[in-house]
Image (tube, rainbow, N blue to C red; front, side, top):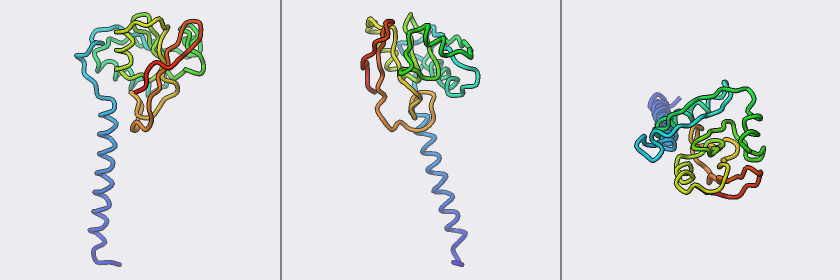
Length: 162
């Protein structure tokens, strides 16, 4: 056995710790926002199932942006999505209502701010599934977030890419 084995083990341990710290910092940075932005004091209702941890993380993200959140627990998210005209193709794990718009999934604050500022003729916007690095989701962002706009009639089109 090499005489410097304890030093090698220490070096490996320190390297792993540095990498872990970097990943944590990147995750926090991806979800970093300010409570003094345009969404400050806006009311939002977030519909989610009780067992979903990433939904709770998204609610915390909205609150950090200054949004006042009413959490609505349900076991029938399909009915909620149907009520708010969210197609299966656009669905995610939670549905949010802000100012008569539906926000489906882990939508970044920038997209919500754009929606509320422009007030397009849409029922809402959606980021399907649960992409890594999106607000409330662990990991780092590895792809562009392609956010769709959708109408009450069920049509959808690209709205914003972040």
